[in-house]
Image (cartoon, rainbow, N blue to C red; front, side, top):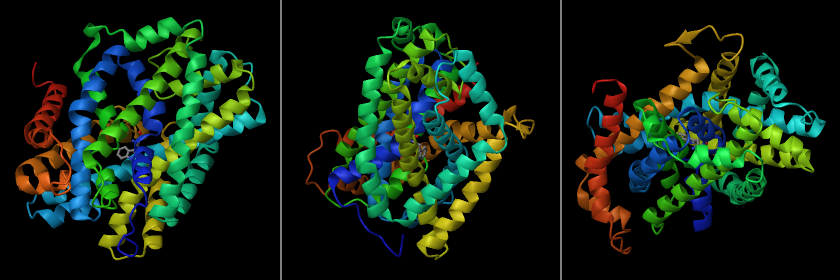
Length: 449
Ligand code: TRP
């Protein structure tokens, strides 16, 4: 933000803010249901490959770009090139962030409903079918979800007004470690459930015949989504980095932590899915209908449920903040608005989109594009098209249009870091990432058949 271009205070704060962006509903809500729909372990393997080969290099690329340009992601590209294509890549990211926030706030709002249910004691002694029926009637109802969604927008808005250091950094520093701990505790319980071995087998024993082009596209989309890539988030965050931040190490740490949280979520969910007879393929409601079964059986279950959904809400907020920050920084710097005004414009836009997305699960469900309702459409278009495409273009740009020495300087902090893979990194940017992403796209379009 031009009026307050502050920097992150500590190294720990930097990692936690980036992890805060990466870790969120993507890990705990989206990962398990995507894995469930795409064959479990088969998906997991492709996912890991995508994180290692595409995710980590792209994360480093975004951080390099952000620190090199020190500005919002839209201007970052314009500052570096006049090419008609590449100078617009930043806008693609800003648009992606707006669309993601549209459905993300809705799901984040659901966590409030579950906190409420935990407190009011309605989350006990029901059968798996009843939990499912309750959830399904909740999401399609026109008012309750909207209320929570709007509350989520307001909370995000208030944190954004707190600024980078006070708001984001302070919030992320203690929420993330707490969430991690609680997940580990719940996993220990989950793997002792009677259906645990079936669940773990589903998640870890691959059936390679299940790998289809759809599975590969989903895994790639999930990797980009979970690491917050291809939308300028890390470009924006890295624009607040100090010159001595070790980019390769920061990126690897963020990717590792993010992937561990997704794994933990899988280990938590699938044993319970198989114990309580829930369909692993049932989609976006998977986590929300599975977890209450676990909590209902635990001693002090409603306390744990409340704590869990609170932390999940907080994890979603740190992700939402990162998305919001990209758009707010863009609006403030491009339209010369104060930070406050820019944030307000963004929050109002999201509120409208989120309300539409939420209603698209109920009363507006008949309005469909390509067979998808608005909620599913925004998820599909962002994760499976815009983020991979944004990443592809960023890598092509850095790999081909920027002098190699500039990139090497940035990634090694002007030679003060010894990083043996620096040259490999450039090769990944130039060839590996673009070719692989392009192949997945081409394959999905069915052009290989
Ligand atoms: N990565 C976050 C999650 O897993 C979501 C997210 C935050 C995101 N910022 C993003 C996704 C930017 C794509 C792009 O919940």
